[in-house]
Length: 177
Image (tube, rainbow, N blue to C red):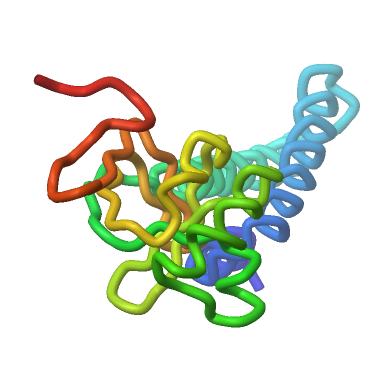
């Protein structure tokens, strides 16, 4: 299988580790070929031309690899979502939701540093933030603004608001008034 075809298949599968390993091997291969060309150890023009073709192929693969890796990095996009604040431990283990759970166990879990999450249309997303300031609000409706990575179901919030007694209150980030 050709180098470019292998890189494209790995990129389509979103297999980050194997793709990065493949790109590292190609970079090492490129450095070996480059040192041979630069130090003129090749001998004949035909060999030099063959290795330059390989070098061009390696460079094409490096470009595909870099584009694929940048696609993974660009997977996070800015969104605003509304849902119920959860503690991920109890939700994952028991499916625990709601304010009754939030006032007792949920609050203790987030105060201890267990990750917070948000339940959006039946799907739980992990909030990549300090969960301690969110502890008193477990089970309430929150609005999260920030970056989302749909592949990993992770939200990186820039602002979190909670709806407490009918009014929105900013608890993480700056309010845009």
